[in-house]
Image (cartoon, rainbow, N blue to C red; front, side, top):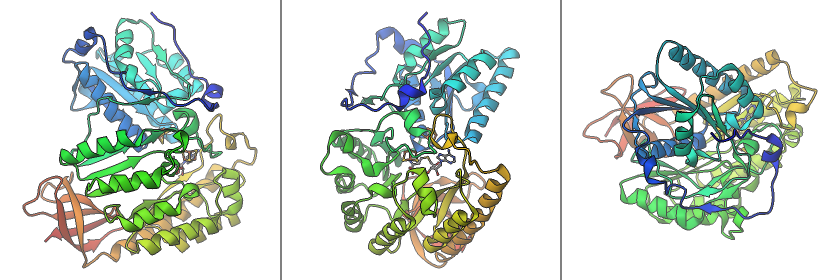
Length: 475
Ligand code: SAH
Ligand code: SF4
Ligand code: F3S
């Protein structure tokens, strides 16, 4: 049995000038690995962001390549993987709850192998806690070694104790890893991994390593193949897509990639997430010139107070953010906007918070992901002494969320009576005779269908609006 390899936050924080290694043959496995699963079933639970979801698609692809088949639910699977998220404490609590349930099942005779991976496992204190509290976990892995799943599963099959393998390196790029995508008509395409921004509240640069961009030819080849297979929409994914290509000195950067992706002719192009700081005029021109770049922009602002933005290390002011917002709105007046906001960052005063509300009203976002600040071990902001009490954070969050619902409903009401294009996804979960799908502006529409199949782009007349959804009828 090999030695455990534990995570190391100090090492994870390092950034060198070494070029990123592109590994194309990680899935050339010895023959015996292909029968490892032998028809056993697997289930993967995903806790995090789109990148984390995309990693799940990769893990599923790898497991199927080594002979596992997908289980309909977590209770029936022979192998359960938890793909965890470290962004806030409540994301972590959910994982501990699930491990507790699986432990209970094991104690009552269920023969299940448990693997825990993803961002949380990049943190030493978490791995230590799992090792001490839940020896029922069979193996632990991180964000850098998913491609080693076949080896990890084999190792864990023969081990009596949890097998731990977490790397804290800067990270590689893996090409040619099998993916089992959730949908055929809508796909996440990862264009980069990692992040070098080190916003002072954020754990991501520690958990996912340095920023490393895939080569444009690899990305475009993936998009073209998706299109040939009937895919209608791609979401270009990265922690900060605007910085795409900076790591390998690509002169065209994200604007170039965005144009080339639009030129494949795929019906819908989206991207996520953009940091307001590196949003260039060349990107705005691409957005103006290519109608298949969808008019929906997720542009996290985090705070409306310049002082807080400075302490967060965001490198823009509220006025600069607003100017960028208006530029985008000017080139695509039909666009919708969403944002991320943190309330209760250390030192945030009532006045700072009011500036956030003011900026929110000035932009009138269509939607927002709002969070109470959660201190993350190892980050700069967590070390500060001026932490905000929980009750203040939650009351600010509630006040902000009132604005969020107000603007959400107001914008949705503007759709009533209009006919919009929707990418049909399938019958809604609650009512099988009603279908749902998203508009180009990322509004979720529930509609009465006629003659539709999943992946069709259909015209829907909007009849009613709620805070988060629209109701309509296919025309
Ligand atoms: N790369 C993206 C953000 C990824 S994390 C970006 O820079 O925009 C998603 C969101 O989680 C962040 O935008 C932020 O609003 C929130 N978040 C990150 N760290 C947090 C923390 N410690 N406490 C609360 N919210 C946090
Ligand atoms: Fe975190 Fe900032 Fe990087 Fe986004 S840009 S992942 S918030 S460090
Ligand atoms: Fe969470 Fe990791 Fe994504 S911390 S938000 S799963 S990058």
